[in-house]
Length: 290
Image (cartoon, rainbow, N blue to C red):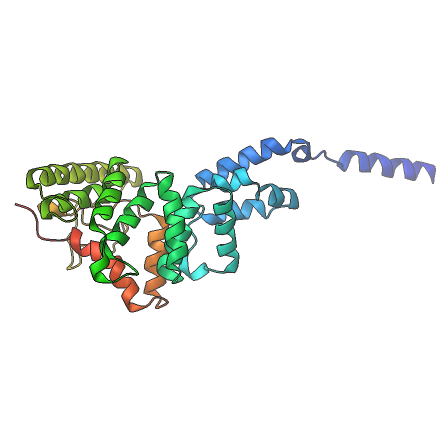
């Protein structure tokens, strides 16, 4: 009997393995999770990690981790939108995540019909020099969203657009050029407008070429439909170089723009809202400049 007990003890000793993860300090785990949330290519990459165990779930809610979450980690799909997804974005906003402020602001403004809260969140991101937030606020000012048509603030829209353009937002650079060409919210300056449009198109082409090389896509030039773009196996296209009558493969789309497209495409949106989103698509697909 004693021999049997001794053998059992030996077997237990051999099968036991130390858990090195438990020995890692919380600070190191938080640092790794923060890197993961910042570089995740989709929300599931981050979520599937933090649901692995209670410790990762607890540390995954650390303010540093949530504050570093990138746009792709926050890029929830429209058909997956839920209260839990909303709460996660709110947590990131409270943690000081600028990208979350912009993402949740766009969703609330255009999809959840909460314009005051949406603009407030986008403004919070714009104060921290978020280019897309600045450009979105510029579009809102140009459109006069939520106010009468005669209350549009074109000068504020131009100022916000100029700031976004200064930070390198390509759509803002293009819109800035059109504003100067048309005298829209600013004194008309045709030579300067054309110069800025050339810069915008050159930036678009270089960014698109770089993205296509990374994706190893073969086709570079595509035909345009009546809206200036169409879907293909290479991904969504956009009217790059359209000011000069050309079109090349699309740049990478921000996840919140994909969310809005899916949201309204599913019929969840209402008519007037989608019209506001399309105003500057129409402006950017005007006739080529001479």
